[in-house]
Amino acid sequence: MKDRRGRLTAVCFFILFLLGFEAGGFQISLLKIMEAEGFSSGLSGVLVSGQYGAIIIMPLLVGGFADRRGKRRVLTASCLIFALGAFGMSSLHAFGALMVSAFAIGTGYSVSESIGSALLAEAHGEKSGRFMNLSQCFFSLGAMVSPQLLEYGSRSFGWSYQSLFRICAVAGLAAAVSVTALAGKDTVQGANPRQEDNQPIGREILYLAAGLFVYASLEGGISYYLDGFAATELRCPEHGANMLSLFWLFMLGGRVICGMLYRYRRKLLSLSLLGTGIFLFLLSLFPSLTMGYLCFSMTGFCLASIWPNLMSLAVESYEGNSGRAAGIISTGGGFGAVFSPLLLGMLMDGVGLRPGFVILGILSLAGMLICRAYYKTMEKKAKNETL
Image 1 (cartoon, rainbow, N blue to C red):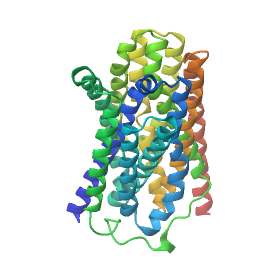
Image 2: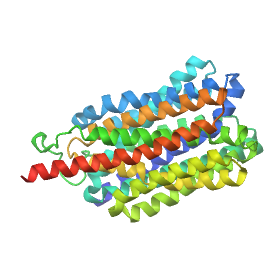
Image 3: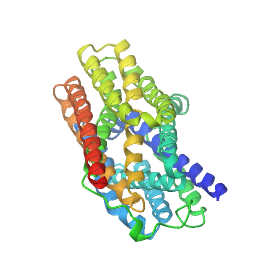
Protein backbone atom coordinates (compact mmCIF):
# COMPACT_ATOMS: atom_id res chain seq x y z
CA MET A 1 0.00 0.00 0.00
CA LYS A 2 2.87 2.37 0.82
CA ASP A 3 4.38 1.62 -2.59
CA ARG A 4 1.16 2.56 -4.37
CA ARG A 5 0.80 5.69 -2.25
CA GLY A 6 4.32 6.68 -3.26
CA ARG A 7 3.60 6.10 -6.96
CA LEU A 8 0.38 8.09 -6.76
CA THR A 9 2.17 10.95 -5.03
CA ALA A 10 4.97 10.94 -7.61
CA VAL A 11 2.48 11.02 -10.51
CA CYS A 12 0.54 13.89 -8.92
CA PHE A 13 3.78 15.80 -8.39
CA PHE A 14 4.73 15.26 -12.05
CA ILE A 15 1.32 16.52 -13.19
CA LEU A 16 1.64 19.63 -11.01
CA PHE A 17 5.11 20.25 -12.44
CA LEU A 18 3.64 19.99 -15.94
CA LEU A 19 0.80 22.39 -15.14
CA GLY A 20 3.30 24.86 -13.71
CA PHE A 21 5.53 24.45 -16.77
CA GLU A 22 2.61 25.28 -19.06
CA ALA A 23 1.46 28.21 -16.91
CA GLY A 24 4.92 29.79 -16.68
CA GLY A 25 5.58 29.20 -20.37
CA PHE A 26 2.23 30.65 -21.42
CA GLN A 27 2.88 33.71 -19.27
CA ILE A 28 6.22 34.47 -20.92
CA SER A 29 4.89 33.54 -24.39
CA LEU A 30 1.74 35.67 -24.32
CA LEU A 31 3.29 38.73 -25.96
CA LYS A 32 5.07 36.47 -28.49
CA ILE A 33 1.74 34.86 -29.42
CA MET A 34 0.17 38.26 -29.97
CA GLU A 35 3.07 39.43 -32.12
CA ALA A 36 3.44 36.20 -34.14
CA GLU A 37 -0.27 35.93 -34.95
CA GLY A 38 -0.90 39.68 -35.36
CA PHE A 39 -3.39 40.06 -32.47
CA SER A 40 -3.84 43.22 -30.39
CA SER A 41 -2.74 43.49 -26.75
CA GLY A 42 -6.39 43.67 -25.67
CA LEU A 43 -7.00 40.23 -27.13
CA SER A 44 -4.28 38.81 -24.88
CA GLY A 45 -6.68 38.97 -21.94
CA VAL A 46 -9.36 37.23 -23.99
CA LEU A 47 -6.97 34.42 -24.92
CA VAL A 48 -5.87 33.92 -21.31
CA SER A 49 -9.51 33.92 -20.24
CA GLY A 50 -10.19 31.22 -22.84
CA GLN A 51 -7.83 28.94 -20.94
CA TYR A 52 -8.90 29.88 -17.46
CA GLY A 53 -12.57 30.24 -18.31
CA ALA A 54 -12.70 26.46 -18.33
CA ILE A 55 -11.87 26.53 -14.62
CA ILE A 56 -15.22 28.20 -13.95
CA ILE A 57 -17.19 25.37 -15.50
CA MET A 58 -15.32 22.10 -15.58
CA PRO A 59 -14.22 21.41 -11.97
CA LEU A 60 -17.73 22.15 -10.74
CA LEU A 61 -19.25 19.77 -13.31
CA VAL A 62 -16.66 17.05 -12.92
CA GLY A 63 -15.96 17.06 -9.15
CA GLY A 64 -19.09 15.17 -8.04
CA PHE A 65 -18.83 12.80 -11.00
CA ALA A 66 -15.25 11.95 -10.02
CA ASP A 67 -16.35 11.17 -6.44
CA ARG A 68 -18.92 8.69 -7.78
CA ARG A 69 -17.15 7.17 -10.77
CA GLY A 70 -13.49 7.27 -9.84
CA LYS A 71 -11.01 10.10 -9.60
CA ARG A 72 -8.24 8.18 -11.34
CA ARG A 73 -10.30 7.73 -14.52
CA VAL A 74 -11.23 11.40 -14.55
CA LEU A 75 -7.60 12.39 -13.99
CA THR A 76 -6.52 10.25 -16.95
CA ALA A 77 -9.14 11.89 -19.20
CA SER A 78 -8.16 15.39 -18.05
CA CYS A 79 -4.48 14.75 -18.91
CA LEU A 80 -5.51 13.61 -22.41
CA ILE A 81 -7.66 16.72 -22.92
CA PHE A 82 -4.76 18.87 -21.75
CA ALA A 83 -2.49 17.18 -24.30
CA LEU A 84 -5.06 17.67 -27.07
CA GLY A 85 -5.40 21.37 -26.29
CA ALA A 86 -1.62 21.80 -26.25
CA PHE A 87 -1.39 20.12 -29.65
CA GLY A 88 -3.99 22.57 -30.99
CA MET A 89 -2.05 25.56 -29.63
CA SER A 90 1.11 24.26 -31.31
CA SER A 91 -0.42 23.78 -34.76
CA LEU A 92 -3.36 26.19 -35.25
CA HIS A 93 -3.27 29.92 -36.02
CA ALA A 94 -6.80 31.36 -36.22
CA PHE A 95 -7.81 33.20 -33.05
CA GLY A 96 -11.00 31.16 -32.68
CA ALA A 97 -9.08 27.89 -32.98
CA LEU A 98 -6.53 29.09 -30.43
CA MET A 99 -9.37 30.00 -28.06
CA VAL A 100 -10.84 26.49 -28.33
CA SER A 101 -7.40 24.97 -27.77
CA ALA A 102 -6.82 27.24 -24.78
CA PHE A 103 -10.19 26.17 -23.36
CA ALA A 104 -9.17 22.51 -23.74
CA ILE A 105 -5.90 23.19 -21.94
CA GLY A 106 -7.83 24.98 -19.20
CA THR A 107 -10.19 22.02 -18.87
CA GLY A 108 -7.35 19.53 -18.47
CA TYR A 109 -5.40 21.93 -16.27
CA SER A 110 -8.21 22.71 -13.81
CA VAL A 111 -9.60 19.17 -13.50
CA SER A 112 -6.11 17.67 -13.12
CA GLU A 113 -5.24 20.17 -10.40
CA SER A 114 -8.43 19.75 -8.38
CA ILE A 115 -8.78 15.96 -8.75
CA GLY A 116 -5.06 15.40 -8.20
CA SER A 117 -5.35 17.42 -4.97
CA ALA A 118 -8.32 15.33 -3.86
CA LEU A 119 -6.35 12.12 -4.53
CA LEU A 120 -3.43 13.44 -2.48
CA ALA A 121 -5.81 14.25 0.37
CA GLU A 122 -7.23 10.71 0.30
CA ALA A 123 -3.76 9.17 0.18
CA HIS A 124 -2.23 11.12 3.05
CA GLY A 125 -5.15 11.94 5.36
CA GLU A 126 -4.20 14.35 8.13
CA LYS A 127 -0.82 14.98 6.49
CA SER A 128 -2.50 16.12 3.27
CA GLY A 129 -1.77 19.80 3.90
CA ARG A 130 1.95 19.15 3.89
CA PHE A 131 1.73 17.18 0.63
CA MET A 132 -0.52 19.86 -0.88
CA ASN A 133 2.23 22.40 -0.22
CA LEU A 134 4.81 20.01 -1.69
CA SER A 135 2.72 19.50 -4.82
CA GLN A 136 2.55 23.25 -5.27
CA CYS A 137 6.33 23.39 -4.88
CA PHE A 138 6.52 21.23 -8.02
CA PHE A 139 4.02 23.55 -9.73
CA SER A 140 6.22 26.55 -8.85
CA LEU A 141 9.33 24.69 -9.98
CA GLY A 142 7.77 24.01 -13.38
CA ALA A 143 6.66 27.62 -13.71
CA MET A 144 10.15 28.81 -12.78
CA VAL A 145 12.01 26.50 -15.19
CA SER A 146 9.74 27.11 -18.18
CA PRO A 147 10.53 30.80 -18.94
CA GLN A 148 14.28 30.18 -18.70
CA LEU A 149 14.13 27.08 -20.90
CA LEU A 150 12.02 28.83 -23.52
CA GLU A 151 14.27 31.90 -23.55
CA TYR A 152 17.33 29.65 -23.97
CA GLY A 153 15.62 27.65 -26.71
CA SER A 154 14.58 30.82 -28.50
CA ARG A 155 18.11 32.25 -28.45
CA SER A 156 19.99 29.03 -29.21
CA PHE A 157 17.64 27.04 -31.42
CA GLY A 158 15.12 29.55 -32.76
CA TRP A 159 12.18 28.12 -30.81
CA SER A 160 8.81 29.79 -31.27
CA TYR A 161 5.99 29.94 -28.74
CA GLN A 162 4.70 26.71 -30.30
CA SER A 163 7.64 24.78 -28.84
CA LEU A 164 6.13 25.21 -25.36
CA PHE A 165 2.89 23.53 -26.38
CA ARG A 166 4.62 20.71 -28.25
CA ILE A 167 6.50 19.85 -25.04
CA CYS A 168 3.24 20.05 -23.05
CA ALA A 169 1.39 17.82 -25.52
CA VAL A 170 3.99 15.04 -25.19
CA ALA A 171 4.21 15.41 -21.41
CA GLY A 172 0.41 15.40 -21.10
CA LEU A 173 0.24 12.06 -22.90
CA ALA A 174 2.96 10.70 -20.62
CA ALA A 175 0.98 11.86 -17.59
CA ALA A 176 -2.17 10.11 -18.85
CA VAL A 177 -0.25 6.86 -19.30
CA SER A 178 1.26 7.19 -15.81
CA VAL A 179 -2.16 7.67 -14.19
CA THR A 180 -3.57 4.69 -16.09
CA ALA A 181 -0.72 2.54 -14.76
CA LEU A 182 -1.91 3.20 -11.19
CA ALA A 183 -4.03 0.11 -10.57
CA GLY A 184 -6.62 -0.19 -7.83
CA LYS A 185 -9.22 2.01 -6.19
CA ASP A 186 -8.83 5.74 -5.69
CA THR A 187 -8.58 5.76 -1.92
CA VAL A 188 -5.21 4.50 -0.71
CA GLN A 189 -5.75 4.49 3.04
CA GLY A 190 -8.76 2.22 2.98
CA ALA A 191 -12.02 1.49 1.24
CA ASN A 192 -13.91 4.24 -0.49
CA PRO A 193 -16.03 6.19 2.01
CA ARG A 194 -19.62 5.08 2.38
CA GLN A 195 -22.20 7.56 1.17
CA GLU A 196 -23.54 8.00 4.72
CA ASP A 197 -20.03 8.95 5.92
CA ASN A 198 -19.67 11.74 3.36
CA GLN A 199 -19.40 15.17 4.93
CA PRO A 200 -22.16 17.51 3.70
CA ILE A 201 -20.92 20.67 2.01
CA GLY A 202 -22.30 23.81 3.62
CA ARG A 203 -22.44 27.38 2.42
CA GLU A 204 -19.24 28.18 4.31
CA ILE A 205 -17.30 26.73 1.38
CA LEU A 206 -18.27 29.83 -0.59
CA TYR A 207 -15.78 31.76 1.56
CA LEU A 208 -13.04 29.40 0.37
CA ALA A 209 -14.23 29.84 -3.22
CA ALA A 210 -14.08 33.62 -2.74
CA GLY A 211 -10.60 33.26 -1.26
CA LEU A 212 -9.46 31.29 -4.28
CA PHE A 213 -11.03 33.98 -6.51
CA VAL A 214 -8.72 36.49 -4.84
CA TYR A 215 -5.69 34.23 -5.14
CA ALA A 216 -6.27 33.40 -8.82
CA SER A 217 -6.83 37.10 -9.60
CA LEU A 218 -3.53 37.96 -7.96
CA GLU A 219 -1.46 35.11 -9.39
CA GLY A 220 -2.98 35.41 -12.87
CA GLY A 221 -2.79 39.19 -12.99
CA ILE A 222 0.80 39.35 -11.77
CA SER A 223 2.27 36.40 -13.64
CA TYR A 224 0.58 36.98 -16.99
CA TYR A 225 1.22 40.73 -17.05
CA LEU A 226 4.59 40.85 -15.32
CA ASP A 227 6.27 40.65 -18.72
CA GLY A 228 4.01 43.41 -20.03
CA PHE A 229 4.71 45.56 -16.94
CA ALA A 230 8.46 45.18 -17.47
CA ALA A 231 8.07 46.18 -21.13
CA THR A 232 5.58 49.06 -20.88
CA GLU A 233 6.02 50.52 -17.38
CA LEU A 234 9.67 49.75 -16.58
CA ARG A 235 10.89 50.00 -20.21
CA CYS A 236 13.06 46.92 -19.66
CA PRO A 237 11.47 44.08 -21.66
CA GLU A 238 14.68 42.02 -21.54
CA HIS A 239 14.21 41.60 -17.76
CA GLY A 240 10.71 40.12 -17.96
CA ALA A 241 11.75 36.45 -18.06
CA ASN A 242 14.17 36.89 -15.15
CA MET A 243 11.54 38.63 -13.02
CA LEU A 244 8.99 35.94 -13.80
CA SER A 245 11.42 33.18 -12.85
CA LEU A 246 12.21 34.98 -9.59
CA PHE A 247 8.49 35.33 -8.89
CA TRP A 248 8.10 31.55 -9.14
CA LEU A 249 11.42 30.82 -7.39
CA PHE A 250 10.35 32.85 -4.35
CA MET A 251 6.95 31.18 -4.44
CA LEU A 252 8.71 27.80 -4.46
CA GLY A 253 10.75 28.80 -1.42
CA GLY A 254 7.66 30.17 0.28
CA ARG A 255 5.78 26.92 -0.22
CA VAL A 256 8.60 24.88 1.28
CA ILE A 257 8.50 27.12 4.34
CA CYS A 258 4.69 27.08 4.50
CA GLY A 259 4.70 23.29 4.37
CA MET A 260 6.89 23.29 7.47
CA LEU A 261 4.66 25.85 9.19
CA TYR A 262 1.36 24.27 8.12
CA ARG A 263 -0.07 24.34 11.66
CA TYR A 264 0.00 28.14 11.52
CA ARG A 265 -1.93 28.39 8.27
CA ARG A 266 -4.57 30.74 9.71
CA LYS A 267 -1.97 33.40 10.48
CA LEU A 268 -0.08 32.65 7.27
CA LEU A 269 -3.14 33.33 5.12
CA SER A 270 -3.67 36.80 6.61
CA LEU A 271 0.01 37.74 6.52
CA SER A 272 0.34 36.51 2.94
CA LEU A 273 -2.53 38.62 1.68
CA LEU A 274 -1.36 41.68 3.62
CA GLY A 275 2.18 41.36 2.27
CA THR A 276 0.99 40.89 -1.31
CA GLY A 277 -1.13 44.05 -1.10
CA ILE A 278 1.75 46.10 0.31
CA PHE A 279 4.24 45.05 -2.38
CA LEU A 280 1.74 45.66 -5.18
CA PHE A 281 1.12 49.19 -3.87
CA LEU A 282 4.87 49.86 -3.64
CA LEU A 283 5.44 48.65 -7.21
CA SER A 284 2.60 50.82 -8.54
CA LEU A 285 3.72 53.94 -6.67
CA PHE A 286 7.49 53.63 -7.26
CA PRO A 287 8.03 51.70 -10.52
CA SER A 288 11.68 51.03 -11.27
CA LEU A 289 13.84 48.09 -12.29
CA THR A 290 15.02 47.56 -8.70
CA MET A 291 11.48 47.75 -7.32
CA GLY A 292 10.34 45.40 -10.05
CA TYR A 293 12.79 42.70 -9.01
CA LEU A 294 12.09 43.25 -5.31
CA CYS A 295 8.31 43.48 -5.43
CA PHE A 296 7.67 40.72 -7.95
CA SER A 297 9.94 38.38 -5.97
CA MET A 298 8.23 39.21 -2.67
CA THR A 299 4.70 38.92 -4.08
CA GLY A 300 5.64 35.41 -5.20
CA PHE A 301 6.85 34.63 -1.69
CA CYS A 302 3.72 36.10 -0.08
CA LEU A 303 1.32 34.28 -2.41
CA ALA A 304 2.95 30.92 -1.66
CA SER A 305 0.73 29.80 1.21
CA ILE A 306 -2.68 30.80 -0.14
CA TRP A 307 -3.61 28.15 -2.74
CA PRO A 308 -2.42 25.03 -0.88
CA ASN A 309 -3.94 26.16 2.41
CA LEU A 310 -7.32 27.01 0.89
CA MET A 311 -7.42 23.77 -1.10
CA SER A 312 -6.41 21.63 1.87
CA LEU A 313 -9.10 23.28 4.01
CA ALA A 314 -11.65 22.25 1.39
CA VAL A 315 -10.59 18.65 0.76
CA GLU A 316 -9.87 17.86 4.41
CA SER A 317 -13.21 19.17 5.65
CA TYR A 318 -15.46 17.16 3.33
CA GLU A 319 -14.36 13.52 3.38
CA GLY A 320 -16.03 11.52 0.64
CA ASN A 321 -16.99 14.72 -1.18
CA SER A 322 -13.43 15.96 -1.64
CA GLY A 323 -13.70 16.03 -5.45
CA ARG A 324 -16.84 18.14 -5.35
CA ALA A 325 -15.40 20.45 -2.67
CA ALA A 326 -12.21 20.94 -4.68
CA GLY A 327 -14.32 21.60 -7.78
CA ILE A 328 -16.42 24.26 -6.05
CA ILE A 329 -13.50 26.34 -4.84
CA SER A 330 -11.64 25.80 -8.14
CA THR A 331 -14.62 27.43 -9.83
CA GLY A 332 -14.06 30.46 -7.63
CA GLY A 333 -10.46 30.44 -8.78
CA GLY A 334 -11.64 30.23 -12.37
CA PHE A 335 -13.64 33.43 -12.01
CA GLY A 336 -10.56 35.16 -10.61
CA ALA A 337 -8.30 33.81 -13.35
CA VAL A 338 -10.70 35.24 -15.95
CA PHE A 339 -11.30 38.54 -14.15
CA SER A 340 -7.73 39.83 -13.81
CA PRO A 341 -6.43 39.06 -17.35
CA LEU A 342 -9.49 40.74 -18.87
CA LEU A 343 -9.09 43.75 -16.59
CA LEU A 344 -5.37 44.15 -17.11
CA GLY A 345 -5.62 43.44 -20.83
CA MET A 346 -8.09 46.34 -21.23
CA LEU A 347 -6.00 48.64 -19.02
CA MET A 348 -2.85 47.77 -20.98
CA ASP A 349 -4.50 49.13 -24.13
CA GLY A 350 -5.65 52.27 -22.27
CA VAL A 351 -4.22 53.82 -19.11
CA GLY A 352 -1.47 51.24 -18.51
CA LEU A 353 -0.88 48.52 -15.97
CA ARG A 354 -0.06 50.54 -12.85
CA PRO A 355 -3.74 51.25 -11.98
CA GLY A 356 -4.52 47.56 -12.51
CA PHE A 357 -1.86 46.53 -10.01
CA VAL A 358 -3.36 48.98 -7.50
CA ILE A 359 -6.72 47.24 -7.94
CA LEU A 360 -5.06 43.88 -7.34
CA GLY A 361 -3.51 45.28 -4.14
CA ILE A 362 -6.93 46.36 -2.88
CA LEU A 363 -8.32 42.92 -3.77
CA SER A 364 -5.54 41.28 -1.76
CA LEU A 365 -6.50 43.24 1.34
CA ALA A 366 -10.15 42.27 0.79
CA GLY A 367 -9.00 38.64 0.82
CA MET A 368 -7.94 39.09 4.45
CA LEU A 369 -11.53 39.92 5.39
CA ILE A 370 -12.82 36.89 3.46
CA CYS A 371 -10.48 34.51 5.32
CA ARG A 372 -11.45 36.05 8.65
CA ALA A 373 -15.15 35.63 7.83
CA TYR A 374 -14.57 31.95 6.96
CA TYR A 375 -12.88 31.17 10.26
CA LYS A 376 -15.53 33.08 12.23
CA THR A 377 -18.24 31.07 10.45
CA MET A 378 -16.51 27.77 11.17
CA GLU A 379 -16.03 28.68 14.84
CA LYS A 380 -19.73 29.51 15.13
CA LYS A 381 -20.67 26.26 13.36
CA ALA A 382 -18.47 24.19 15.68
CA LYS A 383 -19.93 25.93 18.72
CA ASN A 384 -23.49 25.21 17.58
CA GLU A 385 -22.66 21.54 16.99
CA THR A 386 -21.38 21.14 20.56
CA LEU A 387 -24.60 22.54 22.07
